[in-house]
Structure formats: structure tokens, C-alpha cells
Image (cartoon, rainbow, N blue to C red; front, side, top):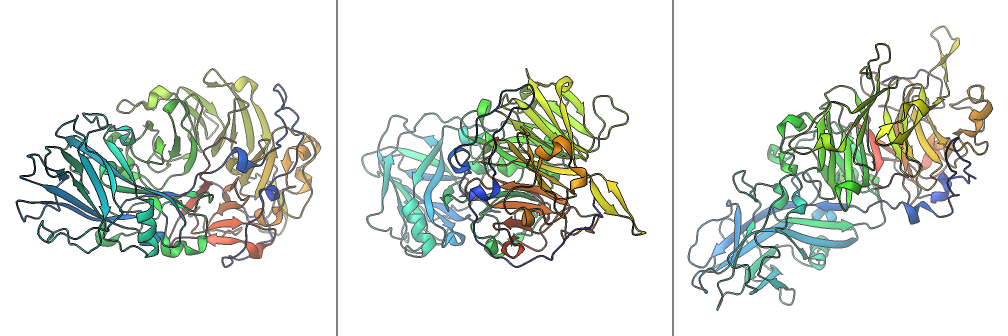
Length: 621
């Protein structure tokens, strides 16, 4: 990583404020002439909101998340024992009513207060059915009175809310259940119950939150079920997975694309459980000003809790993640995936989303210099390394390593690259699915590689040098210096453009170079470095450019396709003289208008350490 000493019009960090700009404020028209050797894409005639929508915030229960499990237990008609620490919840009767079981569970949803809730499901794992053919009635109901998991009995059990019953058959949907250890969401024992009205009431206070009761037909039946409880045990064939514990899944604030960011600061949790740990965090972008109180709505770590059980992947040294993107699942199946890599631990994975449990693909590439990752549409994964020598080079520090889909097979991974390409100080990679090409940014250049038959076509690669900086020497004179590229992301809504973040600042790059898009300004890049055909490649004609490109030491930049809001991170203090040993920041900048005063700064804690922030958009462009 490099730092800049260039002069810049720098302002201090400001208070939260500002509104939302239209998507069009970040985009410019383009006739989109072709990159040499490829067919020109059609003009972008629709908005990004129609073509590349982001996901909405979707929280699920977890000890590090805003929705928490509080307690669960079962009661038995023939005893008064405390069953709250057992790993199974029993429901129904195994002996025609001589012995009856009911189960109770409760969740904390207080941090959802005020958030428009689109949907909520109670997810449970049905691990045993006494009779797969039995269809005796079963019901789930909200509880109307307080209860204690250690002292509740059949005799003192609380009442339920009348008229709020969810009923379903007792037979197993696919008997017997088959748990999936590396992708728990694919297990056939999963059952979801629509509890939207209940969770909405609990969150806004119109329904007392005393949890729910599970019960079943208790006379004239031998139908009986077991569910995994909130106490997973490693010895159980299905209830070893935390994903299979009772869980609320809640989608809220529809239309507000979340922000995903690695946080190398591991916060302390109540009672030290779970142990403080750096994490990948998911934030609701609606109101960054509330983050110090609410925190992220969800955190993820490649650990046993999230069903990453292979200790050779070294997820325990995870430092929050250096690069992370949502992508279409593609060859990995329906749904989306999170592709993420971490420089400290060397972990690289393709994780099911939104379950964030288990993995489709994972390897460990070794600790130290991983800066970027990308999932290609054939299932291969590309990694950018900033300093290791690749492809036999003895002079170039940095490059790209390609790993095949087969190399990340769960339980049998292999981190020997299928292909290596040298690229000095490579920091990030982006796949252009429409053009079948890979774009990669290094310290000095942006490079386009055609992607053919599962390999980077280096013979036909095209390099575009980054405009240099004009930096001040100690004696007051000036000299040329490299821009040092750090981030590369799509400009959502304009497939001809890429965001480029460098030590010098932020600019957009036109793939087609169809028309002049550079205007000389008193910020990086100066006109002396953008001449000839480069004036149609390096673009600063986007609205809000004065605000977006007002800081040096850029670590990430991107835009929300729904609102047009830009988000970026720069090294601590966002100044030309940051702490050289700290390339993270407690702040994420949200830029919504052309004036610095409209900048919104979000942070869950002043101790947070963010390196990159990305919008949760499962699209390549």
C-alpha cells in the first residue's frame, strides 16, 4: 500500500446530513463505441434500478446480530424438570396423549423498532418425525404472558394470544431429513413459518414480545416431532449447526441497498460470548447516523458457528475481509453468493447468501497480501495479490492468480493457482460478464484481459496507465509520482464505466473511450497527465465529482443503483498525511450532493477499522 503527499483541497470530517441524489447524478450519456476487437454494447437506456437492483437488508438471528435468541425450552405433561439446556425441542405426543410436549422460544427484536418490515419468517429445523405419513395438526402461536425457560412447567405455562395461530401438518416434508454440513440452507429439514405480523407487532410494541409456543394434536394421535433448539451440540447429526437453531429471518427497509464492509476491529460482546472477533458487517444504509446505536444488522465470520468447519481454511485468523462482493450464484445454484477474501488469514470463499452459512467453494491462499477477489461466471475465482511474485517473475511484486471451480471443493481444496499473471501491486479485479473480460487495477495501471476458455488471455491484454500525481518535495519543489490504484468497481447504471480509486483520488474510466469525458480541474488528475486519447478514457464529468473526488488515499468507492448515493472509504483522517501504519478508517463517506456539507459519515464505533465498503448488489455491472 502506498500513501500520497500530493497537495489537495482537504476539509475536515463533517457531521451527518444530506439527502439522496438521483441515480442520474452519477451517470453520463455515452455512445459506447467498442473497445478494439469487441462489439459495442447498446446505449444504457434504462436506469440501474431497473437492471441492477441491490438486495434489501435481511437480518437473521445471531449472537453478533441485531436480532438475538433469548431462550427456548420444552415442557412435558409428566414432569417439572428444567429442559432449557437440551439440544432438542419436543412437540406432540408419542403415545396418544399419555405424554404430551410443547415448546417455547423467544427472540429480541428491539433494534427493529421503526424499521418497515416487509417479511419475517421463523426458521426451524425438524430433525425427527415419529411417523412420516402422519398429518396430525400442529400450531405455532404468539405467547401472551411472560415465562422463564428454567422454571416453566406444564402447570404454570403461559397463555397464547387468541386468533393468531399458524397451523401446518405434522408430517415431515421430505422424510427422513438429510442435513447438509457445508450448505445448511440446502438441508431438507428446514421449515419456515410466516410470522411477519407477530414480529412487526413485537418491534413496534403493539404486541407484547413473549415469544411463541409450538404445540400439536394431543389426543387420538401418536404424531411427534423434534426440532433443533438454541443449544447446538457437535455430536448431533443435524443440530450441530447453529444455522439449524430456531431463527428469525427478517427483510426490512425494502429498497435500501445495504453496505457491506470488513471491520478489523473486533468489538467486545456481553459476557464475552461470542469471543470478540473482526467480522464482515452488513449495515442498513437508510440512516448511517443511527449506526453508533444500532450497529450492523448482521456480522459474518468464516467460523464453526457459520458452518465453516474445515480448520485448514484458517478462518480463526480472519481480520474482517479485504475484498467482498455479492454475485449471482450461477454455477453454484439458485440465489446469490458472497465472494470474499481476507489478506490476514488468506481465506477466500464463495458463501451462500443470504444464509451466510457454510460455503460453496473455499481455499486458503496464504496470509499477507491478498487485496481483491472476484467470482467468474464459470465458477472460477480470481485473486489479486499486491506483493507476491507470480508467474515466475523475479522483478514484479504483485499479480493475479486464477483458481478453478474444482479447486475449492469443500473438504478437498487446493490453492495451487491454475494460472498466474504478473501485475505490479495488483489490488482489485472486476469481471465484465457481458464482454467476457476481466479488469484489474495495479499500482500504476488498469489492465483489461479477455477471458477465454477459463483463462486470462494475456497475449491480448490492454493496459491503461493511471494518470500520475504532482507531489510536493520537502524542499518545496514538485515531482511526478504514481497514482497507486486501490479500488475498482462497476458504475452501476452505466456499463461503460468503472469507478477507480487511487491514492490521488477518485475517477471513472470509460471502457469504450467513445467521447471526451475529462475536464481539467484543480484536483487529481491534472490536465498535464490526461492528454490525447486519455481524455476519452479517464472521466471526471460525473455530477458530484467535486465532493466525490475531494479526498486522497482512497480505499473503496462505489454507487448504489437505487439512489445514486456514492460511498467511499479513505485511509484514516482522509488527509494527505494519514497514519502510514493504518490504512483503515472508522468512517464510511456517503456522498449525495455536490457540496461537502451534504456528506454523511457513518460508523458503528469510533474504534471501527474499515478498509473497503461495497454496496450489496448481486450483479457484475
